[in-house]
Image 1 (cartoon, rainbow, N blue to C red):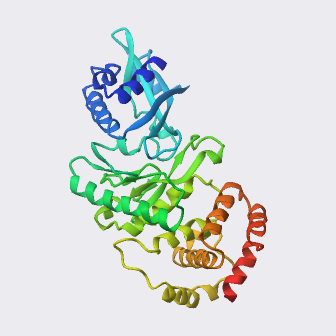
Image 2: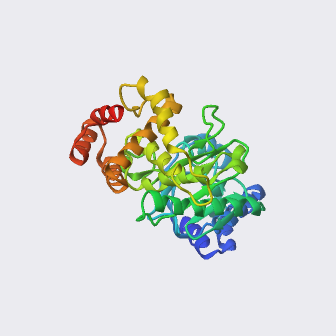
Image 3: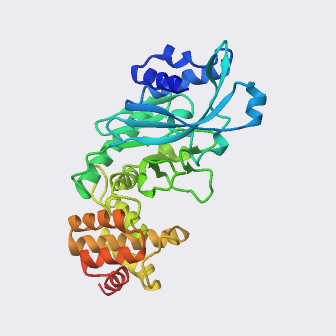
Length: 373
């Protein structure tokens, strides 16, 4: 099994389709056709590193009944790095079933174990039908095969968004953004499910994992490092929306512990900043409206647990707070605060300790300052 997986990874990196298909059950024409599509997708992404790592065997009687006594269902970890996008290895969970055919083991199924995988597993962009991948200097865009016009327009927006994040938030961010703008039947890509009626956004930043989501090391998770576009709204996508999501991408490496008001407030702050080719917003008017409509009704910053229960007020107050911090302390100070909180702010005591050290204020004192300002 290890040898098969090594050959499979090597075939993608070398763009050798014959080698990739050599370990697939030749008698399963449907599986062979699907694997041809998968190979054609994978080779477009520009992996600098790729390996498939054998995991634990999965004892399934129904698999034995289906594929015979030699069947070997097993969990697999796909570890990869996309050039210009990932600064380190990303891991994704898969489930493969091997069985002997003609005296040797071959792949006979790659979906039977999907029901036991973490949410979003085996729903990567390359798993969802034939795709077209277009690369810019610091962006990668994925659409369905043949949709060159959407690929070109989305890539232009993505490149502009990367520049805006560098200009307004962090000039030191040198990473790239992956934008997945596919039309698919079930409307789920990775861990983002747009079939949920509460999910109404044009796009959402999606987790990547250094450890698998079933493992306990939360620091292995990069929150919001790829961007998935709502399949029904791909032609309504705007550069500011990608600026918002790419701010999450730029901040993902800081860590998973940032308070939600800062995570979303920073993204909206950059989204509402100056963007080449976009009309500047009347921020003074927005400050006044948010104070009038929302601030007076609250007695604390939106909590992580309740942030998305009242998204309209939460996002507005989050932006107002980050805007206040930037005007009072400067962008560099706020970026540094974000880095420290995201890295170490795992509970409220830690967050207050960090904020007192950085600003001389707890979260609650910051909120009081905001109301008085």
